[in-house]
Length: 333
Image 1: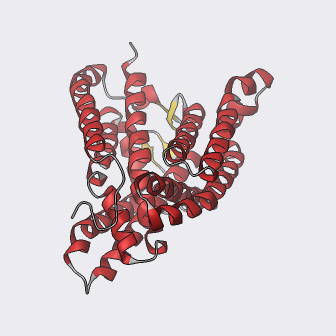
Image 2 (image 1 turned 90 degrees about the vertical axis):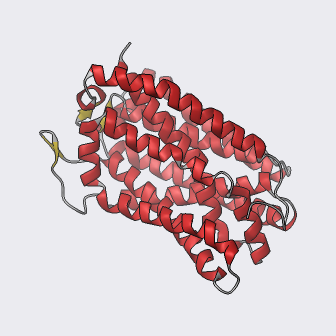
């Protein structure tokens, strides 16, 4: 068994789990100012309040796993992305505090509304910027980061930041369609339709630009007819899910829009994996170059074999307990 590749899949799974789970509650925060009455905002916050901190467990697992399993990659990526990552963490702190304090005040509620919105928006934007900076390539010399302080700030990374914000807002809107009823449900369904258009436009823009950022990305998709046909199922499935999303929103479905939106994110993640493999930092550092010694990988795998199923069981149980609709005036306080 190739432990380095296995661990690469486990870290990728943790990142994907964070994106799809924390993505919708960040998206709920992005939509927060546009939900009208403060009672509607209460309902939206109550829909994610019992589970948001559990969702962020996957961020800790992904970051901690990268540090332990791929220390070389961690030592290169962190200096390259210090600024957006630190800002993202501060934003997550602000929105986390808003969860706890918003229901404790009336006069100061507006302050925590702003914190929840600004923290959600900033965290999503910084995650997109970090993704764009990684995709466009990180300058490496020997075994160290060789770029500058602002190498992460480019038109491409700003566009990926905007794309993630729009995509998370779509996840948030479809989550509210699934979890609420009445006024909040209707508002979220209207926003979901427009955000679906924006998300698909963003996916198209990033997908068309990305192959020209790295030669290996271009060769994965356009090096020949056989190569293109081997990966053509990704955009074809994306079109199927896009149709499912629009059709289910138009038909007034409750669950399918959210599942279709999750599918879009999953396919985008698979596309990134096709582009990256076998590199963990394109275009110069491979999975095997960045991996810790095999003895360390084996030792850590024993812990992961217990930890990851435990997190999955707990997460599934939490979602089961808090299943169903959140009604106005009810919920977690």
